[in-house]
Every structure is written in C-alpha cells, then in structure tokens.
Amino acid sequence: MREDASCNFWTSMLPERPSSRPRLAEDVQADVVIVGAGFTGLWTAYYLKRLAPEREIVVLEAERVGHGASGRNGGWVIGNLAGLERHIGSLPREERRGCCALVADNVDEIGRVLAREQIDADYNKDGAIYAAARYRDQIAIQRGYLRQLHELGHSEADCMWLDARQLEERVRFRDGYGGIYHRQVATVNPGRLVTGLAEVVERLGVTIHEHSRATALGRHEVRTRDGSVEAATIVCATEGYADRFHDFKRHVIPVQSLVIATEPLSQATWEAVGMSERLAFSDASRLINYGHRTADGRIVFGARGNYRFGARPKDDQAISDDAIRMRRDLLVDLLPALEGVRIDYGWGGSLGLSRNFRPHAIFDRASGLATAGGYAGEGVAASHLFGRTLADLILGRDTELVHMPWAFIDASHRQLIKRWEGEPLRWLAAQAITYSYAGEEALMRRDRPAPLIKPAMKRVNDYFASIIE
Image 1: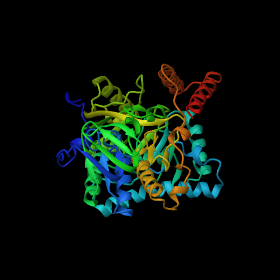
Image 2: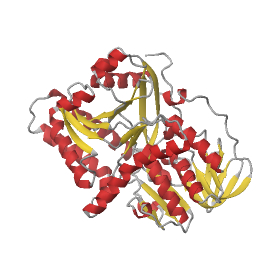
Image 3: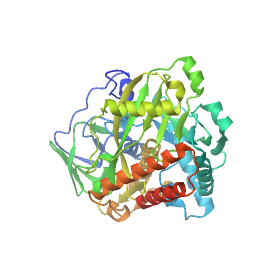
C-alpha cells in the first residue's frame, strides 16, 4: 500500500482540474435555482435547459462541482432502484414490468446522452455479478431474491442465475457457489462524468457558482454568505449533504461509504482473477461488498459503510490506513489472486438514506420547492432518472416519468418522507444492525449445521431490514 493512498482515484484521472468558478457575490434573479452541483442538480439543469432553453437557471455549489457523493462513489450505473419493491409492489403486473423496463433502460439512456454530448466518462456496459453467494446458506437466499426480481417486473433476460461453473467463467471468487447476473448495469468514472456534465450545462447557458454555500432556503429565495438568488422554483439537490439548512436532514441522513482502488493489474493477475470483461461485481453480504474493473485495469472496491453519530456527512475525502487495510483484506478474501497487490487510492464520502428507503422526486408547486434523493448508494443512475423526472414536474409536462411511483407533485417532503428518529437511537440501531449482520455472516462462514441459531439470526436481520423501511 502506498503511503499517500488516502486520495480519490477519480479525481486523479481528470485530464486537468478546471479553474474554480466564481462565487455568487450579488443578489440575482432566475427562473430556477438549484442547490448542489452534483448529479441530481446537474441532470435537472441539463433537462430543464434542453426542454425550456429560455429558462434562466443558476446552480449554487458549496465547494466544487462533484464535491459530494457524485465525485466519490464506486462508479456503478444500476438498472434498479433501492426500495423499488416498496414503490411498485402493489401495482398490477404489467405496470410493474413497465416501471422496471423504464429503470433498466435508464442505464442505456445515460450511455446515449454521454455519446451525444461527447462526455468521455469511461462508460462501459458489461453487466454485473449481482450478489454472488459465497456460503452455502446464501444459495437459497439469492435464488429467492432472483424470483423476487422477476415477480417485481425485471425480465428474465436482464436478471438470470449463474451456477458455480458459470460464475467462475466470469470471475474467480473464493468459494463462489453461484449468483445473479444483472445485464442492465454499466460502470463509469464519476469524476469525469460530473465535470463533463457541468461543462455541458454551462454551454447550454446554465450559470454555476462554486464556493457559494446556501445558508438559508426561504420562500422563492436562496441566500449565501455573499449574495442571493430569487427564483420561482428552488431545487434542493444536496441528498446526503443537507445537514446545514432547512429540515431535509430529518428525512434523508448521510451514511458513509469508503472505497479503495488497486494498482493497475498485470495480464497474469487478470487471467487469475478471470474478469476478461470490465465486469461489476458484488457478493451477497448484507454489509455490502462491491467493485468493478476500471478502464485502466485496476479494481475499484467499496465495502462496509458506516453511520456517524449525529448524522454528520463526510466533508473530507481522506480515510484512515486502517480503513484502507480492512477493505484490502476483504477484497483479497473475495479474490485470492489479488494477494500482494498494492492499493494506490482510498477515499470516502456520504450517501443519502431515507427512513423508509423511499427514493423520491418531489415538486411542491405551492411553495416552489423541489427535491430528489434517498438513493441509498445507487445514485449514479437514479440521479439521472430523477433529474429527468424533476424537469418534467417543474415544467408541467404530462410524461410517463411524472406518473411513476417515485414522482410526487403538490406535496412536500415533510408529508411524503418519514422522519428519522433522534439520537442516540439512530446510532445505537446502526451499531446493533451492523454487529447482527456480521454475526450472521460469521455463522455462514463456519459452514456447519446450526438448525436453531441460523434461522433465528436470519429472522432477526430480516426484521432489522424491515424496520428501516
């Protein structure tokens, strides 16, 4: 491991760091002001400007473009939504299929937009090993999950089972017993995507102010330290970084996600790993371990997010040497051929988690306030879909998107999104869930009969998952 490994790989891959954009230093007027220059804010600006080029749009960013989760994530573009089953589970089957098809096509639509706008973000669609079973007890669980995906509305062509032999043909996990292959998953360099998208919206006529932290959201006005924007519509696009103003932090809290990147791997190592394609992968751990092969032949790997007392977001990107080592050990346990491989980068950020796993796009016409978020770590794709949805809601367009179950109009986030409990209950619950999940996994790893303990532990953890909802 390099001594200076605590840095962001995506940032290092930018051709050059663009100059800082000017801060907001006066009182101005616009049709729409967007708080947050991450994926949600920039995609919303992009679709608003393409659909209504006469609209004056201003984007305010507290730091630099992509400072938050948009520039720090694991680079997955997933054809699914966290909590989708709770949105559409009660709909008729054909409506569920239509919704899942729209979510799946969103992955391809992102690729089409990047090609049209000539944004070089290393977009690659080779699908993903989605929750591979590494313990015998996980085989039945993951087969059951696949049935749920099909019942929900995902097609059998998009989501299919790979047995142990088929899994090994794609990637050589330690003890890979089988897993779900999800065709509608791509990967990107999110740093290049967010900076490229910012340049595109500026060419369309959107104004972006950096180092212009919103200090207050009023009725049709956003104030910063040095100026203000008066606008008919305000879009709060801060997701897991909404702790400093308004009451969004009571409904969407930040959870930390930590990621590492290896050195470029040799051809011999890749042959041992078995990933001939730029595949994305995850195992079936409830604690979430995931990664993918990058354009320059590294593995980016994220694992074991955590919650900080008081719902504090992670503003800096650095992570500790211990955090890097722990993720390296998890990666080597998953892919033994990586033993001895150097870790070149390690970084972290915050994702937004809603109390009932309810990703949402909301526009309250009475107040002029719009918001989207609650992506639960799947925001690279979801932010594009929800940015399109917000644009249609704000412009009053009668499209398929505004009738989707994540789209809400004429109601506020306070009415639609359940509030989180206060401290210390949140922190204590997070610790209990983490230790319980780890205990269940330790029992599975032993691969010994435990006819009483294992079912009991599974019921406890299923209950923990249900109460988060």
